[in-house]
Length: 328
Image 1 (cartoon, one colour):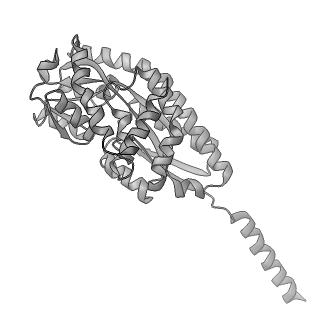
Image 2 (cartoon, one colour):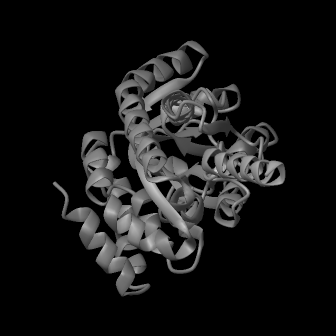
């Protein structure tokens, strides 16, 4: 009888432990972006991490890395794809768009395609489903697209008109930017965002482009003292989750992750416009000469042939272009 009772007690303990430990106690959510922590996207990511840790009650342990802490954007995207990260916050064109079958995501960073920042945000929200269709074969789930603001040209020499771009070496993150610079008479060179500062200081390139917030967050005005207001591109960053990890979560935690991503997106949108204005003023205070480009129509005309060139690359380009431009 004693043996039977002992066996029953052991069985009860095992069943009790199984019931308590049937689901994983804590899920790791390692996030990264190649943008600075002080950028608005960096702040949006930090808010997401904070919200997840709070709302999951410790069931998800979310952490974030910024800048080049985990390597270049391409390396961070590869880590998220392989499962060495659970999420990467990256530009769609330079991130997943670097992989075969997703190249059309570069259209998000096409010159003079979108009206303004508000229009761009509407486009991101309206096309998230199509973005997910494109990145699903890569093992990603996309959500919470965040605009990085309208981008301008920062250089080590004055640029006041299109002719001043002639023969400058300009940094761009992917092929679309290189094509744009070549259309404008400059030469393009590809490098990670975090390599721009030393490249400009050593005259490897004479300029780059980005929103005032992104430029100032990386202190790029230390070397580039001339900012041409061109608003040529509006870029964004999505949260790209490793789909296997996301789907491994219980339904309630998946819902929390999605809820927190949406709240972080709204937070970043709320702070971005004011941050762009403040960053521009800070750059001026740091000695940057700001020029409004008067011949911007010439810049647009110079870039126009790019559209036909890229749309001829395959039907997926035209299809995604039609999706993006259909949003008012």
